Length: 128
Image (cartoon, rainbow, N blue to C red; front, top):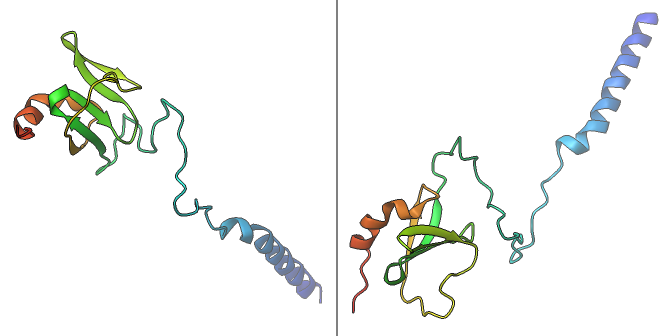
C-alpha cells in the first residue's frame, strides 16, 4: 500500500508540473495583424545576424541611383552618397532638392554597397 501511495504521489506531482508548464511550452507566438509593420526608430537595424557571424543568405536590398552616385538601404534606411571625394553615410536623403531619377534595386550580401560601385556603374546604365 505504501508503494502505491508513493507512486500515486509522484505521478500526481509530475502531472501538476506538466499542467503548469504546458501553457509556456505550447504558447503561440504573437504576430502583427496583416498590413501593420513594426515601426523602427532611426538608426535601429532590421533583424538579422550580427556582423561577426553573417547568416548564409542574409542580404541587404539597395536602391542604386546611378545618376546621383547614391545608394539607399531599403532595410536599414541609410543613404550612401559620394561627395567630396569619398563615400558618406546619411540618415536622411542628402539630395533633398534634386530629382533622384531612375533607380535599380540590387540585393547584396554587404552593408557597404559602394565597394561595388565600379561594377554597378557599368552594369546599371540609364538610357538617355
